[in-house]
Image (tube, rainbow, N blue to C red; front, side):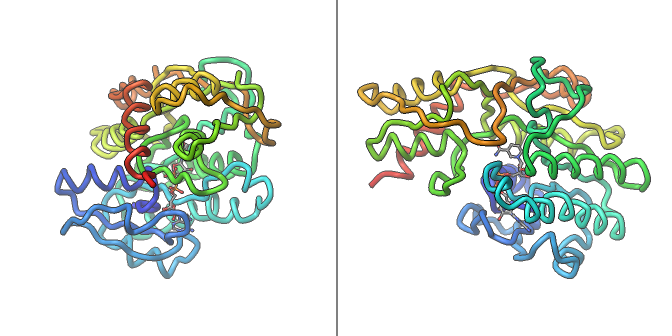
Length: 309
Ligand SMILES: NC(=O)c1ccc[n+]([C@@H]2O[C@H](COP(=O)([O-])OP(=O)(O)OC[C@H]3O[C@@H](n4cnc5c(N)ncnc54)[C@H](O)[C@@H]3O)[C@@H](O)[C@H]2O)c1
């Protein structure tokens, strides 16, 4: 698994370790950390970059399924440093596919992004819509998807792209200036500050608890038929505004005395996002296993204990 020491990857590693799968985590630890990983005898951590073929090839030797999650993940940072995002997210994905092709890997499960839909107005987002990436991050992740489809079509590798919609949960880093909104709000509220909303709070997202993504990856890895490089949305199919999110979190942290504050919108952000899950159900039999409220409560509980003090 590439990027397995990161937020989402570490949850997938945890599930695979429980299933007794033999797992190699390949990660440059640029945003992930060894401390995110469980102690398990069936788990090996290899420190390396998807930019280096000489790191990748030995790590992939003998692997039958690759979960490819390694990426740089900040939309605003991609706006200031687009080339670095192209290198890791697009070229890095080609490097992983190329190593997979040379070493006879059977299946690649790619972590793609709903940012591919960009500012298209229609909701819910359906995989057949034209893509409209609005940031270098979105463009590079979309290039990755297209290479996944091309490799599945030209070579003896089966593959799928899972387009995630705003994933949240324990271990999402709250300390980076580019944190996901739920991580950033948790840090602010627990420190006694009002959550700061960029924009007027009416923007909406299909916030998805991380266990739903783990479930989708396991379905993709164990799917019996050919996936053929297909693209499927992974989300819960529930739309919440940023203001609703902030208010729900203030209630969960017992801080309704704090009132959300508003700041100018960020470049590259999209107004609304909501997934159609019809294709995910048809292709993978995917249905969400944790709804928004249950996931948010579990996440706030985790931040309360991990950010204590
Ligand atoms: N979090 C979300 O809401 C979301 C939404 C859509 C898609 N995704 C995708 O899911 C994947 C995981 O994201 P995350 O939220 O867990 O982020 P994360 O930053 O926690 O995880 C990314 C991991 O990739 C590693 N990495 C970065 N550059 C690398 C390189 N050159 N070589 C090897 N490893 C490298 C990092 O150290 C980290 O462990 C990414 O591909 C991301 O684009 C995430």
